[in-house]
Length: 499
Image (cartoon, rainbow, N blue to C red):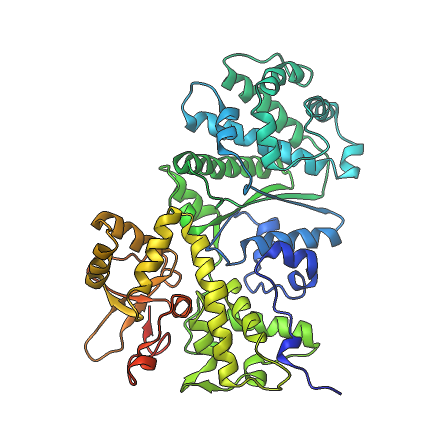
């Protein structure tokens, strides 16, 4: 019998959608869920799931959708805002009232129509639906919104003047004659739609996931105000369904850093009462107990058909006098996507050997840095910076030529790149928020304290602090660790104490 090889293990893909399409069992038997997030999303009270890019938000929605395919009384819809037009959304909201009034009504319209599309798949409920519900469905059919559409299509259709003009007349068949002005008309229509949905007779659970809130737009103020209204309206609708005893729920998947930028005096109430954070960072003193390595073992067991300690079985125990597990974890931002990609890059150099050699692991780490980590940082920085500023920020780090730098050195390099002080602060803050750099605090007699955003979400960078470029970015930025260029020196990525 041929001995298993490291390349036999299917760790997954960068995209949860691709994983769902091509290897769905990875999101079923290979879905690591020690905190019962899936059950919380489908049946619990919290509806907002926060996590950094790559932390598994979309995987949670795809996992739920696959579960629904196997569960007759569970209906899951996953819809994304990545093609959502916030300009069209503002047109849907219309009116002269403040956006705090108009935006939630517009979201209620879009969300309830999306829920009706889910209910229409519930044949048992449709057969017994009351007249009020059937009238609403006929009105939506007349408006061209049935049999189905995602939120992006719904908002574009709903923004057209001909559509908005026909909505009050069509809904006269489903409710009392609507009043003016337009935002009060929409309030009445939404009320009729909400009541009709609440009357739908079913014991089946219907859950609508809303993903893709981090899509890049040029009108950030509009986007953030719209998303804040989405949070509030999902909260209100979910509370309404619970009061009415309806097994319906909206779930929002949002990047933590995007949520932190949303306006509104009451947005923190949602975070405190109705959110769950998808955090993966575990202090790596005992790497084998971290959730990320437990995820690796779970997926290895699925591929090999038996329990497997991946690092003990396939990797050298130490590389350059460092624990291999810690070395690899330090090249990630402690999120599943990073770890899956670093293992896949190492697989490209594994060959047919039963055990990896240190140089094979190092070549995989280099490929991970150049082909995945730095391009991923570029994608993430696109939510904060313009394309030219992304280039300047990475050029700034490359010019440093070593992992640990001072803020004064950055300022000097920034002047060479003709960056103003305010512009430099913006670039540094964006790099810190994306965990491309961290801060370093020295304490007498102790190892330096490294703080990255993914380890401490409340941390910030202050001009004058020493900074640390993330180990995963070094090769991609063509920076060699100090220990490589100058012999003995501070180790990269693991010798330092962590926050």
